[in-house]
Image (cartoon, rainbow, N blue to C red):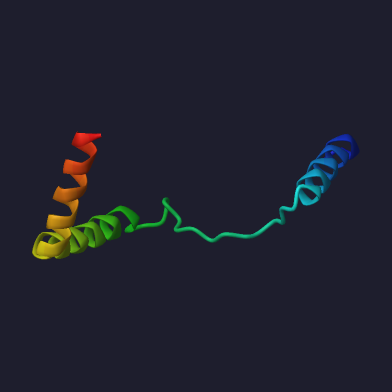
Length: 71
């Protein structure tokens, strides 16, 4: 990285810190990993099955939708 770019980055980070922010590191799943999409499908199917069996959730969602229609 050129010194000019490094100075811009440093200035930007200092401005963010001055605004009360701090950097963090977040680890996320690797979308390019083998099996990623299959695992997404598997977990989505589990959630969908659980949601369909949850009558209270469906009632809550129906009531929420009705509230939105009235607004």
